Length: 241
Ligand SMILES: Cc1cc2nc3c(=O)[nH]c(=O)nc-3n(C[C@H](O)[C@H](O)[C@H](O)COP(=O)(O)OP(=O)(O)OC[C@H]3O[C@@H](n4cnc5c(N)ncnc54)[C@H](O)[C@@H]3O)c2cc1C
View 1 (cartoon, protein in one colour):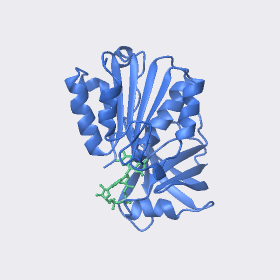
View 2 (cartoon, rainbow, N blue to C red; view 1 turned 90 degrees about the vertical axis):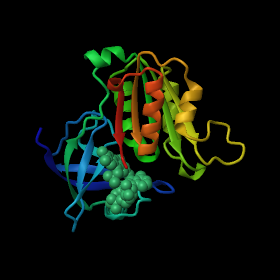
View 3 (cartoon, rainbow, N blue to C red; view 1 turned 45 degrees about the horizontal axis):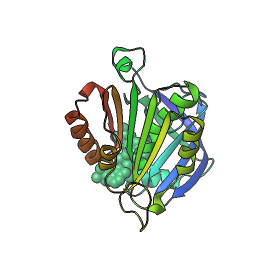
View 4 (tube, helix red, strand yellow; view 1 turned 135 degrees about the vertical axis):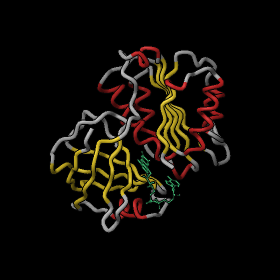
């Protein structure tokens, strides 16, 4: 499908924690976007031929603006461009792009996914946030939904309170935060997020897994889930790098 080109304006730019920044774009032309939770935007970086991809972290129900989450640590043209944006700045992107979407529960694949397992590392939480808000708040999905999110340091934490609140409002949603370099006396899971998933769950039958973030986690989780007899069509992935 042909992509649309959007002219947008920065509405808000916030430092969330350490290397993570949030940018909210107001759509100017066209004024509305239709997308599936999990899709991304192809950002034009001024002065550069190549473009960079950034997932939409807001849910599709919010269609006059899009929120993004940027890890600025790569320090290349894309992340530095987003980091430099201030309210009022105009930007162009194309989209929505990608196929990292939760399987339609009425489709052949979706019907078999009676439990949903989301695993993210770092900024890989961005499309998963959109998917979770869409499933829980918009669609009122009643399946058991687990989120395991791996960050490195305690200084990296953000949105933790939001996910905890979501878990209070929606009892079928469970949130597990993992730090790979935790401080002393960290009460939650630590180490690789894939190890924490393995420690948390025993039954992987009828699971639909949605993995987003670095390639190592995606490879580890895919191997692990395959060993647990989760077939490839139920392992949905979006690799950022
Ligand atoms: C489908 C898709 C969606 C994406 N969505 C997001 C998103 O929502 N938020 C986001 O921050 N990034 C996202 N990315 C990554 C983003 O497109 C860029 O690759 C990233 O911002 C680095 O671009 P750059 O120009 O700053 O650095 P470059 O000069 O392009 O890259 C420098 C190096 O950093 C590596 N790298 C890229 N990302 C990371 C990272 N997070 N941590 C460590 N190393 C990294 C690259 O592989 C490369 O080796 C997504 C990538 C894809 C493919």
